Length: 522
Image (tube, rainbow, N blue to C red; front, side, top):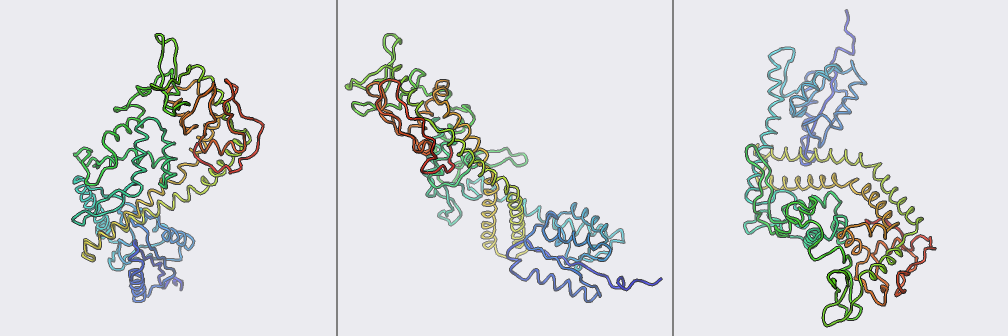
């Protein structure tokens, strides 16, 4: 029986791979291809296709070029005989996945061969050699990873932060020219964020808005991670390892907040546990929700409050020698009128929410694609770290060059991880918070009356950034927060000094705010 002419000469696909920028820009890919083509010439093998991978990890087979190779093999099943690589570590650095892929390729009619580590797999004993060739690079990766982990753990136990400096810090050097981070220009903002949370007077959403307004790029989850990070209190968290428990050790860098402040913040985030004060501050009583928000109309000092005649009558009053004094009930009735005047036109609310919905839909559409791309880039950077360590072990680069490469790759990885945590983390929360805030404004007096003392305190502080002045039975025209001002647009200002609880603003305006309604945190 005659053999078809197309089968007298074997046909092969070439596959070359590198995983670092240095290898891509160097000679590795061209050298691999040249050696493979020289082998094919000697063995009289026809090269039908060449797939070249630049920057993909060999820990998995989820590589762009290899996926195209599989698709090509499916479409040309029976017309290609071989898949040639230079060495087995160019094929895979994961023994289990490699054996599985060899089976898949066998079904497609492809025999895989490493031309510099040839094996005749028809001989059973050679399968043991194949296992060694595939296991060796995986063991090497694991050993380098373990050595790196142990080295980083030792540095952490000595109090040195080994990752990318968190917000509020930047890279620096100690007196021995070793890496030691130091406070950055954003350190005062981070300090203030901790202080505000520790005080119990601010919600995390309010603090998030504060740090963003001062140039610190941060999303909600990143803010929570920041507030949970003991690094800011001068402590390094060393994770558990084998039989060693997790621990906190004193850090070498300068702390931004005290340990006491850090513990208070953890208590607030935990809902009042771990040492945080529960309920209202001791100086506040439910009878006086406006204490701390009132300024004396006579002398400009801060008003306090107290009871008279065995607690039957309550008054806001100034300190001696000023005689300013008025009944709590009168002040509260007038304040209810002020709250009723803080109104947002329904059509403005609907338009504001529609804009936010468009923002959310746009982000949702591209979130998965961005996430997949970032995960792929993180895997590529991890492979670069592994290859840099491999060069160090083989003596191809000095320790100083490895340190520079490792630091650069770790920085790239942390930046990618930050970006991975960021996309899609704020749009849905922003829309949900906006709906809640606008519904609250629709019945602000009712919500205020049913709120607890701390919630009342936050409502007054967030809507009226300055203190209120009560005079002649009514409040002077108060300054409202910027977000309320933008939402109210051209509506008349809150009426000043109207007698009794009749102070109102016109509710006839339905115009869109003249300064726009660009989304902002409520």
